[in-house]
Image 1: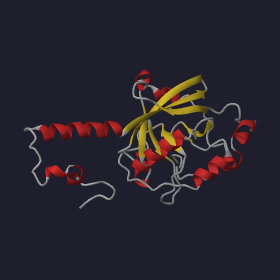
Image 2: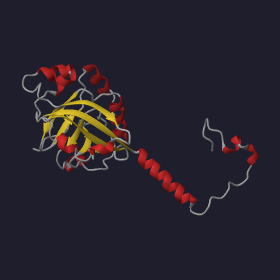
Image 3: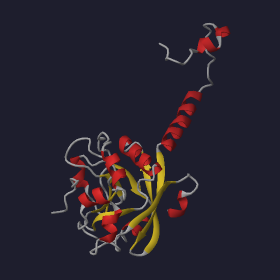
Amino acid sequence: LKLCLASPSGRTQGLPAYRDRAPHLGRAAPPKMPAGSSLRLAAVLSQCICAAAVFRVQFDVVTTKGPGSFVIKVDESWSPAGAARFKELVEAKFYDDTRFFRVIPSFMVQFGISGNPKVSADWRSKPIKDDPVKMSNKPGYVTFAKTGAPDSRTTQLFINYVDNSRLDGMGFAPFGEVEGKGMDVVKQIYDCGETPNQGKIQTEGNSYLDKDPKFGSKLSKIVSAKILPDSEHHQFL
């Protein structure tokens, strides 16, 4: 898969109605809420919804500088389908023990092919629908890679090293961003250029990457990725 990321060249069923649960109320009008209560309630609900729309994922990696970590903050409102697929992949441990296989310092770093060919094949058969592009591909923003065909996003991601706003018009919709000083770690990822063959990664997995004499032992890798509880993300800021 050569991705289209060119280098810089009435009643609800099952829910009883309110009267069914409290028939003694008959048709009496509901009690009035104190002045301003509805506005306060709306504000609280809005805050809850906003809080639920953000989650963070910690990537533990090994780069040219050794072990390190960075956190991706995901805002589900930016790209709902993309955020949902990313969460699904992290929970399935898809990114664990995978490699950064396309690295262009003046452009972006790409990853997201499983080290197990059977796992890759399974997820490739489940593309997701495109999302409208709401955010720009700015440095540190994270986006699903895709082909030129519509609805072709599956598992591969890229982190923008520079301002790649030219990709916005091509349908590349960011769903999150690397937080705090995390880009310092991302920029330490081994620069393998575009040498690794994506087709061979798909069919042979890590066995191809690890044994190749040109880059095998040099490639930076993801050890694990996990969703952070709210109380843990502050240490990476």
